[in-house]
Image 1: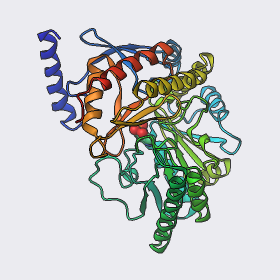
Image 2: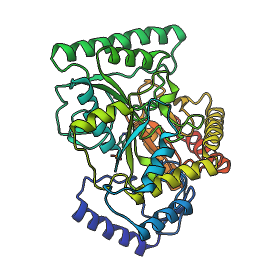
Image 3: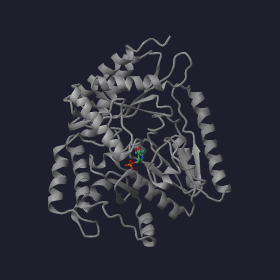
Length: 434
Ligand SMILES: Cc1ncc(COP(=O)(O)O)c(C=O)c1O
């Protein structure tokens, strides 16, 4: 990188710190300044190209003309708060709800995943008359105070809410069938204990809230019957099932539109955000008609920007592009290719258990061959080496030891092949663990 560029970057970094503070996170040891994007490719200020295999916000591809045009045309025409009759938001609501089964037939828009989850919890408390929450013990669902008091997967200064009980999400990776069956039993009795504890403390159960792909947890593979058993118990206790589709939704799984469709129980409430507007801030809470009717009758609920015509134009354009460009089948095919080829290249590698994930969301967990312990240092080394080699990926998991490969749905076969070639070479060339 030319010296002038490095000094420009340092000066921008200093200005950023002086305005946004020193704790506003940045990826990479040497932060990346991107200036433009197209499809799954990004360009940095120093002219380098990067393959985006990480970002799920530019869902249908960076700077997609159909979304950009829809937003700018609507912005030139009308942009205002949502208390006027507007056809765009109704058209979009119909299209969005058309992707759900018949019980999930009402939507309330928001501006982020956090807002969607906050409203979902508020509604669950309203419907159940309870306040207790069941959460994964390594998860993240947003920035509000309620969610901060239920955050287990990121640092928060707030103490865990007294009304929150956490569950260890069981992972069957590497387990025999018999061991997985035993794990199912112990995990469901943990659920029983948590529910009993909420009831004894007088909170009762308002909801269980989880991401159906268990992304933050490291894309863990739950035993068959776990989600069914968990949701059944929550329902019996009078609580609601909230599926957080911020990461797992909108066709991320490829063969399915929504992550919750991986399991039998239909959620009472579904929340979504990130990919919805292809970069335009947009979130939503989807529920059944009766719940919204009852909640609305008791609460004058109004959110200034949520579901405004510009946001609706963005959201609707995303759904149209997904359909016009057949992005779900593409995600299914390229996700399968990615997993198959990475597994083939890295089979028997002593540091990796298996290539996990579903659809166009892949992960691989690094462990130290000597101790079997999580190996976040190697995962970080690989992420940084991929960055130097022009491919963006990241890390998740309890110890940040799982690679996170979650490209825009616009990822092509040739992109998957390029990623496999680079990642396999980087992992194979890691210094020997011995
Ligand atoms: C699963 C999940 N839920 C909710 C959120 C919060 O969404 P937002 O940052 O749009 O508020 C996130 C953000 O990372 C998330 O990953």
